[in-house]
Image (cartoon, rainbow, N blue to C red; front, side):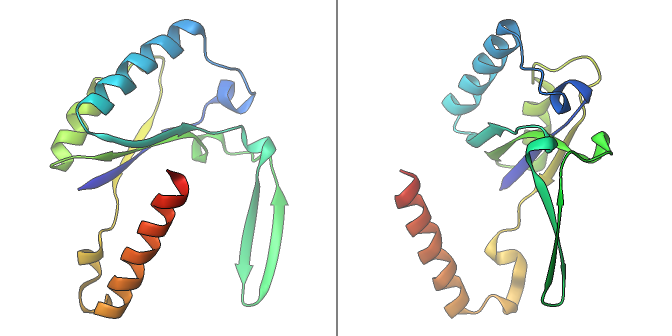
Amino acid sequence: MRVMVLVKADKDSEAGVMPSEDILTRMGAYNEELVKAGVMLAGEGLHPSSKGLRMRFSGSGRAITDGPFAETKELLAGFWIWQVRSFDEAVEWLKRAPFDGGTEIELRPIFEMEDFGEAMTPELREQEERLRAESAKRAG
């Protein structure tokens, strides 16, 4: 099972305050544990919303709103993608994360092809597998 671990933004991350050497060291050690255990597939920090935009789709129309965005509690500062045996295992890994000071994390399962049932036809499954393989080649 894959899960996405969403690190919520706070006033510091939205202000562009970079983490200290101590925080980077602790997070690096934690990420190393995740990688050695075969759990971490990806993980990145995100720039503040002031460097981003939102696009709203309405029929064929596209409306763009430039950041920053007001509701910090709804924003993300980073993410991981983990491969775990169960949701409970992900929770146990998350409990070990080197966060403090009110950090909020959201943990959500990622859809797998099986979750789509009969709507995921053999042709769509083949297309998905081909696109994943092609993306992996480009990333590697």
